Length: 246
Ligand code: ZN
Image 1: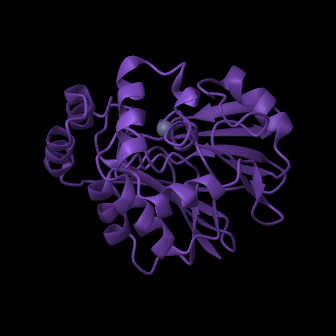
Image 2: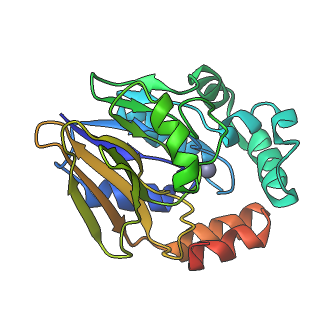
Image 3: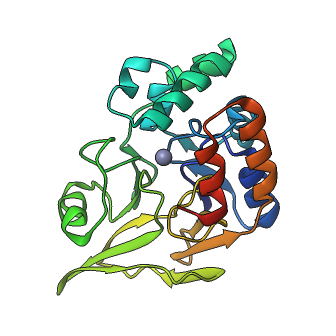
């Protein structure tokens, strides 16, 4: 089985389309790690694209929750809150119902793999460092735990020598073979709002037979996504940050 791993699409349909165009025939089923909506201007189109992919599993993220219940946006900064309010108004009834039904992570995918949005012990927790990764590696029910939420692609690994982290180079691709008896915590990065200084859309493909994890970046028409944000009347900073990947 080859999984296409998508996280933090954030209503950026231009980025999602570029990812899907870049990866035809290289995956069998999709896994979606939450935050389909919020920040970007096409929440309905993104949800409809995701439904059409028929993912093996899709879990919710904090922005999916906030777009349904604005009280969940109480601790957001003012830009994120403005986007949550805009999204709340923009969602169709069907798509709101779809988001309502998304389960919280973690969800076990197979005997080796589980997915979560933030961390396996708390869907809203951020893993930014090796110190953060350690309790998540402890909590993961599977040797491979896929997560999102930070919008930063990274591979953390645990072996007999302890925990180590490897940040993928800012390049087109990072491919690693997952070794038996090691535990991994891997963030594919964000499809729709990268924050590692590389504006290209990020995604992953995991081949369970070969045990290869490939983290990829693809260019997309950032100016199209920006135009949609301006036209929707969303905060302009949400458009500007896409150009710099921050
Ligand atoms: Zn997010």
